[in-house]
Length: 51
Image 1 (cartoon, rainbow, N blue to C red):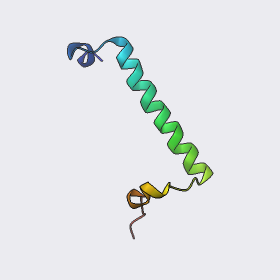
Image 2 (image 1 turned 30 degrees about the horizontal axis):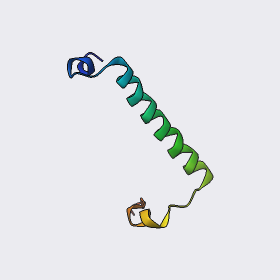
Image 3 (image 1 turned 60 degrees about the horizontal axis):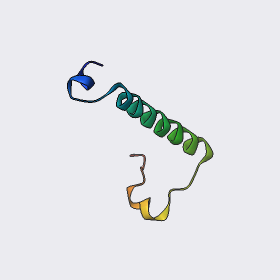
Image 4 (image 1 turned 120 degrees about the vertical axis):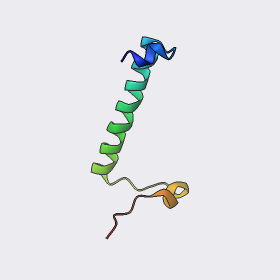
């Protein structure tokens, strides 16, 4: 945790990073459970299970 302030970031910015990661994780799990289709512009980046 000390590396962030040492690099010039504030405690508030640390919390924003944690919030952003938390939102992304929740979104990923929700979309996985709901089987949300990938938007057409992002289809080429869609993850495929390897054989």
